Length: 176
Image (cartoon, rainbow, N blue to C red):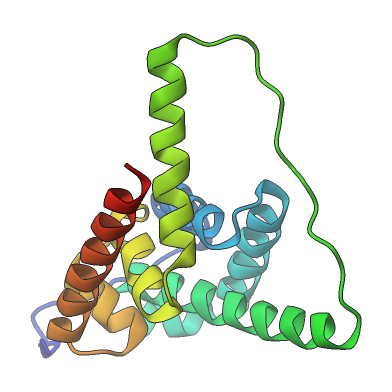
């Protein structure tokens, strides 16, 4: 870890600067975690509400991006636990939220099918592989930022990314 010296002042962040700088990537991360626009918006808003309440922690943090993503991940895991508990108590059927589209060319259909297949494969990964994959490819976080957010060694993050790529590759071969 880097030590903060007296020569370098601790950066202070404003709420609006955090929203401006990290809002887009955090929203993309929320969208990939939830697979729903409405849920992603709710998660995004709750994350920034939590961040607003905890601005003092961010001001003392050396890496605000990591703090933002780990806060969002913590909230999402809480939602997931709550949903699982509710589902055990009162099971509900899944909603079909597919949107009918107009006629497409064959190439665009194949491309959409490949994207859908990859997303489905990523969604089927266990959380320990899926979350670093989403953080790396969607939120475009560096390995060390993911490691800080998940409180894991960087080597573990790298091995999980490698394993998830292999699992996705294996799944794509099965679809061929």
